[in-house]
Length: 455
Ligand SMILES: [Zn+2]
Image 1 (cartoon, rainbow, N blue to C red):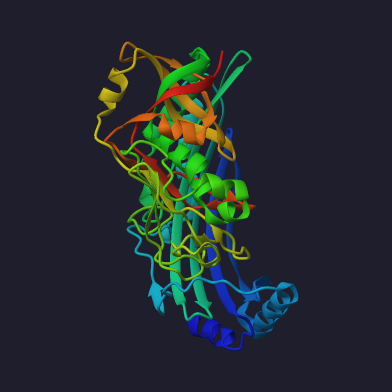
Image 2 (image 1 turned 45 degrees about the vertical axis):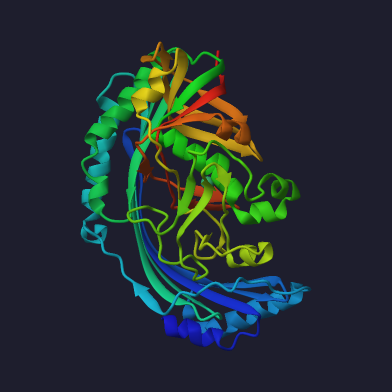
């Protein structure tokens, strides 16, 4: 298949051209409330040719390889209609002809769909019935085995198998008019077993949703906050990681002024990394969707802005090295500058030391969601606890953190030694492309003077 793609590209009349073709075999099972909502199985294949002529991009989508020459021609012609300047593509090393087969410890494709339905039904039963007070539940399983073939006019050529299993658990509890929810789950590129044996997690999800209906709301005001691994990891991804995507910086003059390399972003202990080559993480691939090798990129190193994430085009336009961060979600999507696995590196404090230093504060855990507007962010934690005299107190609900990214990074005054990389279900969204598999991670971190909404 790779040879066929490369052969068709050899006749491309463009400054740059690439073709990506993939086949997805997928199955999903979804429960909502007591009944199964749907069971789906699909095989979808398709691809896209992308071409660049005088700086203008054209593309042509297809669902079979039968008429690839036509689609290459069409993409080149479309690009020729819009290009007016000069094509800028970084001269990064290309993916050598190679095949990367999945090495699944337990392959989900050999397991009967009836077993997968029974697995989800059992989790759903626990969510609904293990703790009084749960009003409704969500339990979902999804698997996809994607085979991607890629070639570019720069000589890149690879085939990669990308398997993925997702298991998602959610509970909604009600006490009078107060409704609270809790979600959790697991994802893996390695094994079906990641979706198995999560009975205790399902019970924990139900228990926490009900506990939140009994908890008081978080007191509003300015607090010292300790963020758990997951909330701090989501913060690193959402509030900072997206601002490190070079297409965003290149297109926004204001961002170019804010994100000058070398700018002091935080204390010398602060390091934030994106690494698409780390083992056992969801954003890991040998090459990105332009055939550039992935790797470890320091975004903040020793507190200073050290790098950003690039496609071939943004790297050339900004005169910086390509980082292997051009990624596409669906078969028809063009690659965008995206994160892979983004995390805050471990510090030296223990979690107990972070909490012990606080007279009055909030321990905020898990993330329900968030919004960012340039450097302003708003995040909802899943749940949390009061901190009083250096000790954890009662559970609180409705914790909403808001602030300015730059001020908040400077206000981090403690980084624990307990880095956890989270491989959760779902993924990242950008430009209408979601869910992109990514991992995020962090140790516990302590932030001084965070504005927390509440009552
Ligand atoms: Zn994202």
